[in-house]
Length: 239
Image 1 (cartoon, rainbow, N blue to C red):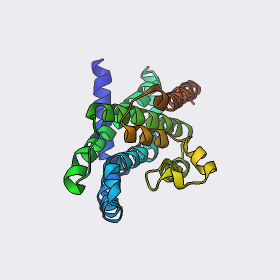
Image 2: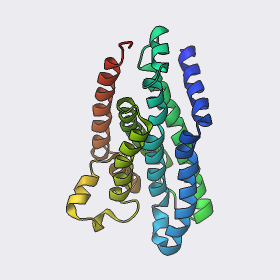
Image 3: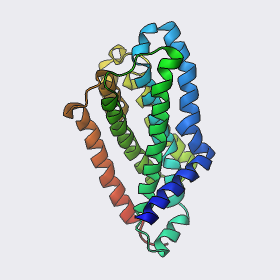
Image 4: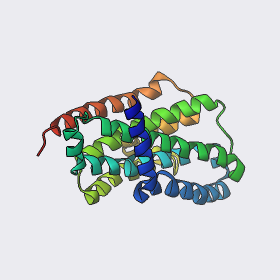
């Protein structure tokens, strides 16, 4: 257990030193929060009631889809994988330590937005803080599950960035955080329900952690967990 916890701490420090990951976990989400928060609240004052939710969705989606797959791909797509195999370390351990480290980073980023928004933009906060962060935690886990599959499947950094954009951009445009989902054509609104961001945003707005809202996230987590297990098993052979 001590070695496992040390591995998580080590991965967390490595993420901090990785400029690409650091940008997607903290810098870009928080700069976007400051820039777009000012625009949203100035042009549409009514967005103050949902600013925390929309900026949290943006930050978590960016970190989980654009940031988290990078160290996973670097580990399983390089000779580092062989070092784990030769050392007799189970191949799922690097994935777990990466995901736990990413979870901690994204929770910290979400907490910064939660406390900064009322101070900077005079926004309202969720009625129930515990429920809000429970929803955020579930949304982070779901988004990281998708990011894990991307990191395991794609070895090339350029291809990984391109594939991640195909998930990241529709998540933002179809989830309702940029403009009301009701304004979308029915086909696009239905397509938006394929992305965790849509369900996470809806639950944050209602501040209700119910099974109906959680079910799509749980299904996504289960499918991604199965996919990751199968992919890791196929990577056990030393080339």
